[in-house]
Every structure is written in C-alpha cells, then in structure tokens.
Length: 174
Image (cartoon, rainbow, N blue to C red; front, top):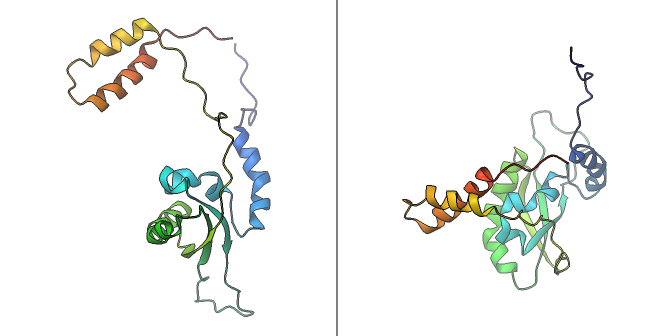
C-alpha cells in the first residue's frame, strides 16, 4: 500500500512565488503584471528585444465619474530604445503594439513613446543558458543514419540534434 501525497503538497515552480512578489513592484511603473517585462523577448522577438525594452505604461487620467458604458482608454507604452534605433522601432511600433496586446489579451496599449537610452546588458561571458550536455558518439551516429534521406541541410541538422538527445542513454539519477 503506497502513501499518497497530501492534497496541495506538490512542488510548485519558483516562478509562481517570484512573480507574485514582483507584481506589486512593477505595478508602480503602470504594469498590471510582470509578464510583459519578464517575457519581453518572447513577445516581440529577439531582434526587437535587443534594441528596446519596456519602461512603463502611462495610463490616461480617469474621470471622476466614469460613464458605465465607456471603456477604459488604452495606455501608452514607454520604451527605452538603443540610440540610433529609434527610427526602426518607430516603424515597427504597430507590430509591437499588436504583439503586446495579443500577449495581454485585450487592447491595453494604443501607442508607443520612445526614449533613447542605452540598455543595460548582461556582462559578456555570463550566460543564463546552460551548456548543452556532451553528446554520445553512438547516439550521434544513429541520428545521422536515421536522417540520411533528408535533403534540406537545416532540417537535417535540427533532427540530428533532436535525435542525439532522444537516443542518448539515460543518465542515472543522482
């Protein structure tokens, strides 16, 4: 007879706790939630994320007696933009607004204001990504053989990398 885990005793991702603590901090900058800041690269793509970053949302002032049928006016997204890239971001502004609104699930942002300022980068040499595990020569050979008939080079290389991981012998648990 096995012991069943207590209800609610499952391990939860650390992100669940961190985001709950970060949300009040980002609310001061006008953001309703931290996902816009935390997932900026996923929302706008790496090319745009490398040259701009969200700074705050500026909401229009609310009326003292809002009309019940009048919806909240959308906010203005203030972006920090690397010097020299303002014109490019200005041209991409409609796409950025669409991506942000799609991420948030409603028409939250109507326009973008640019502020040229150098973005803070992570120090060179430090990466948040883990180094890929060493490949098993046997798994590599089997993956190469399995993808022999694929003509497109990029697709074949991606399938070989996937095959190396799938065919590698499992490591013992520590």
